Length: 301
Ligand code: GRG
Image 1 (cartoon, rainbow, N blue to C red):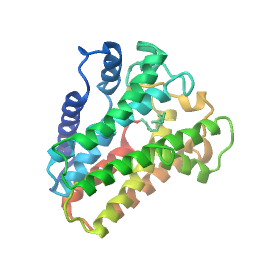
Image 2: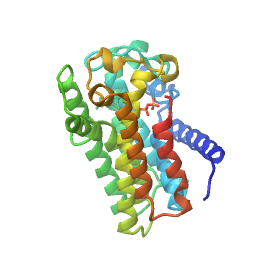
Image 3: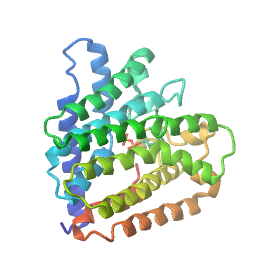
């Protein structure tokens, strides 16, 4: 589908809305026991996030002419994993942050034990959805690959591993290659998983197209984090919905702290161009993915 920026904005809103409905469907209601745990899970997941990862799943599905209903489960699962990681990241033992998505963090609104449990329960829920959702692709080998991919890339060889590198790096000088390795794991792995899960939902996708999409996902996974590092310096707390300057406060290595702000902006642009180049095998049906890449490097929150 050929799209312009207005259509992109409207599609993004539709995707965000769709993700909210899927999340609402899969999260246990607050009325059932244990009430406080379910309240905490819903509080964090349904807080106003950008829903970047579900949007990326829907956009990839739309590029590949995959029915969006068949990726609702994957969209909910990935956002739920993301929400768990934010809850745990904000804990006193990690970043010790009080503000997330413009609201008190889970451990501030509830308590530390509830926040830990909410993260644990959300992680389990994501895998329940992937293995259980009747609307997802019925091919069992594709489903199994999705479970494996999410497990691998959210675990110690993906997001959790990246977080471990991050915690070990506080106050220590990292070079740009080490920083990139950390970001590829902490942020990039989950973004790559979004595109892979949507691609696995397509029947008869060529290996060439699968690899092109993976290449695109790797580039935007990193550009998203470079822009995040830039916004920690140039953004403001109200727009970001989380404390601006948090990386500096925690003495964390970032792109601007290692290569400077201007070179960081150039790096983000370079990655955007690389993402576009990866998509040359596709026609205008991939325009939505091209807009997503631009959004990642132009966003203000
Ligand atoms: C605790 C296992 C574990 C992992 C934590 C996600 C994470 C790893 C840490 C959060 C801190 C951080 C800067 C992570 C990089 C990924 C990132 C930019 C998260 C914020 O994602 P957005 O901008 O947030 O999509 P919203 O709130 O819009 O969903």
